Length: 451
Image (tube, rainbow, N blue to C red; front, side):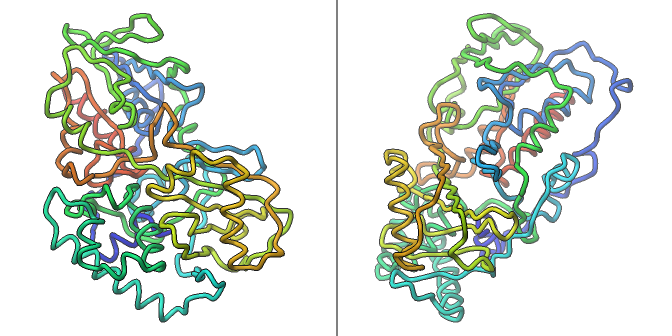
């Protein structure tokens, strides 16, 4: 699965953070000495849960407030069809030294190495591109990424620079496939909004990606064990004027020495939480300037498989960039006859206005282009609409051409040593990832513990 891997491998990104066993350490309940201080964690996604667990281990009284009726945030698993459908995160990217790998093992999550080389990409006439042709195209694409970065100014979008440097490739269907299935998947952004200067200045762990096969929610369920988690408890206001932080939760007041805000960037951008005093101008600017990307997933199930089940991935090169051009074969790691495809960039937002029937018709046009007109329609469809989700307003954050990577650091800054911020949008090096969200929670918990 090329997200986070292709871009980092080709542009030479190296992991900078050395993880220590203390990041995953735990201690028995009877060894914990209460320190008399309360931390209220807002959001029960992986960053909030990681922080809450860590803080509890350090003797704090921790209350976790979650607006939804279930913990997990963007780690959501739907088992309605019998096959675990992870609406949000699916992979552990770069499992070498990635803390999610050990956490998954502790939580009872099972994994499978998804081999990026087990892929065949088809043209619209059903003819596959040869391996040699694809390799050559990917090498050219690698060079193009470097050229765009080197030729850009801080306010230019990737698309603007790319179209100037590579006007022919900008209309080429295989290049549209690479731009969406590689770059837009990696960053979460349509290339028309993505910063040409800062799109790749984050980091990645090494190793081939593995997919969680029995549901990513195993991890958040594990992290939530033993915590005081209050569901259906949206926070509408935070007042950090006095010594204690006062929160408004379902119209009622709750206070503690510290508050940790771990809601997604999209929630902050939509002003779902009122702050008193107002947030500093620099933080408000960072919230405004960084953007929330949109990627949607579509799981289709059949009674029997008509595709080559030896492949891990199936690619397709339609005219429309980001349109159902990348398929994950579930038969490689489950007994289910299922494919998962994606919508990237602006097309991801477009899909949210389409009916299930229209979605199936569009996807089947591509599959029929590969396998012929006699293949059956799926028996079931599951899908996401992340852009319309009022608890996220998107999939994950990215650096737009109106911002810089410094904005991630600004979002991570605390307020008067009383209000703290976690989430993938606060982790500059590992933004947009599950491990980035997790590490941000650990970072802020340790920051609070040091006060």
